[in-house]
Image (cartoon, rainbow, N blue to C red):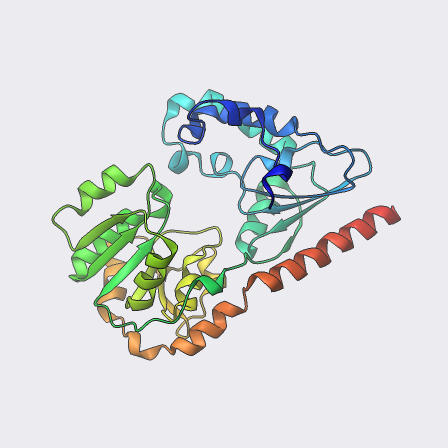
Length: 313
């Protein structure tokens, strides 16, 4: 998109706002409500928390593509992890519930998220799975002797479980990614079978996934792109049987599951895993079902349908 068409909120003028964005959380509702959307009759937003709360002109539709219900609202203890913030977060939760009533229609990125929208917001939603940029990946050899976990390093991602499981199973694990939990995870990985890689480029991720025995998804994902990115690189995934992984993995065809969120359960799956059972071409074909063009066409159909229905009423 041309830079001239991008409109940023006033928060972008705050020094180091990108690094310390969590500290600005109480300012986000007002910042998003302040966007001037006059002159538009159809607004499409993508959000995990804030964009659903934008104010739209009278008569306009707002189709909100929602990647998850706000984590501070439904998973406070594992996401915020400090009781001192509770009074402030309660204010955000109240705003979040009010904002959730504003969009004309929600489009959830998975059936998993659609269930959360129904539970926490009391609203129905269409389901349209996230697109995967399959062209970023090419089928690899699968000849490496390691597993790989690629993730934003946040506590709920459960990378700690993967590190402990790899040690129990005596297998190599590469962890790619950065985030607030990185210092603690590096300490946990010290002297173990896990290597912490930090940030990796797209090209490096393609190589890592393509040569791995399998990718690992140790926590419950809202949707989770890694099983599909691994499939695009011709590699299967070992995932916790919960959340979005149940929608992106075909059991015994594109990956396998472990059933308990404990290191011993994942370690058993790692120990028994046989990568030769999986066909790289079949894995690639599975990933291509989630290609961006198909997503764009389906989202356009939903927006046009909502527009017609709104106009009719």
